[in-house]
Length: 164
Image 1 (tube, rainbow, N blue to C red):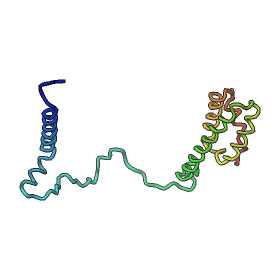
Image 2: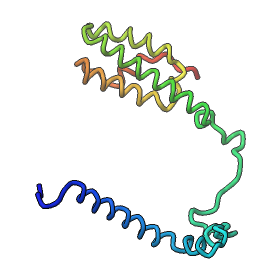
Image 3: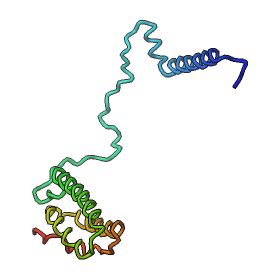
Image 4: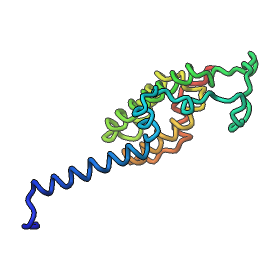
């Protein structure tokens, strides 16, 4: 460390530099507001607050405001239904993980009934677009974590029969 300056001198110089930095930054960025304040004018700046123009340039295209007809509306795409389904999928994934952890010591034949029982509790997911992904997740996780080689087609047979 330098022996010719003291800590007091060091922190005094650093503090002065910090004050000067913010002082000149404030002057640079807020010079018009400072001038208005020194003149005693109001700080309301009408040129900063701009009202949106009637035509904002159509940056993203025109919006189509039409409500879906009865034929076009699909309950699977309804936002509330989708949220419920996603929550159900999350719950199922957590249960699948816990069943797989418990199944590591089981024989391969004992796994199928456990998953059949588990998937029967989530029959709401049978006819959704989540089913193939869930089946693939179960097959991959059983292969990776438990060491069983199981195909997605086999996992698909564990689901209850379709409601439709």
